[in-house]
Amino acid sequence: MLCHLWIPARPLAVRNDKQDTNIINVMKETLKAKRSRVRKIIQTLRKVYPNPKCALHFSNPFELLVATVLSAQCTDKRVNIVTPALFQKFRSVQDFSKAKLESVEEIIRSTGFYKNKAKNIVGAALEIVKRFGGKVPHRLEDMISLPGVGRKTANVILGNVFGIPGLTVDTHMIRINGRLGLTERTDPVKIEFDLMPLVPQKEWTDYSHWIIHHGRTRCPARKPDCPNCEILRYCPAGKKTNSIVGTGLVPVRGRPRGSPLRKQQ
Ligand code: SF4
Image 1 (cartoon, rainbow, N blue to C red):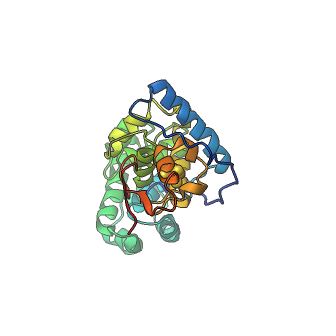
Image 2 (image 1 turned 90 degrees about the vertical axis):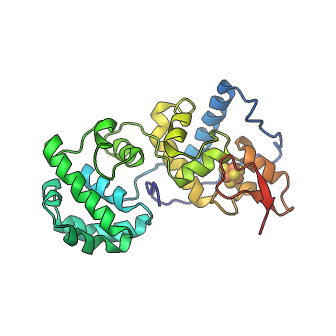
């Protein structure tokens, strides 16, 4: 599971506008209008999900890197169960760089894909010791040169440890930004670049948190709760769905834009 960077909180009651049924035509929407719509989405989500925080437990940048690597295809909850023993046994980047793969594998086994994850964690530690003096680098270009660290993991660390804004594109970001009509792509890196001109840079980290949390609570892949969605009035997919509530039609699961409709199964 991706970006795990949220302490679960109940959505605050924020009025949506069920009467506003004008369908947003994203094909004709200008860049200026799209930016304006994104600003309104941000204003709303900020109220719904105040104080976004990282749900993964860590006490230094390398621990967040390890936790983020472990969170691939795994829940934050499971990662937080596993990491105390791991960080107890390996207390520093240097410790991880000298670790035997089997020792790491044994502890992280329950997070899945443990062999690959152990290899990446130890490999990243080795590189950090060798090339960066034992400190996690601050530059995205340096971070993505580490084993197992892609732009998503790098942005998680940059945004949550170093205060450098980053868009963390995970499965929720892919799905919901598609439904919002902010991207038509499915490749995470391309989506990140589609969003950059639309979302103010200083909001990149929090925007990722808001959207990811919204995906978990209100807008899952199956059965998004459009009638009660706080950003319904800004969502072309939701408006389409809302205008046919009761017909049994829902946005196609996980498809960018979410606009195509199919019969609910
Ligand atoms: S209106 Fe529906 S599709 Fe749009 S963000 Fe809300 S729950 Fe998701």
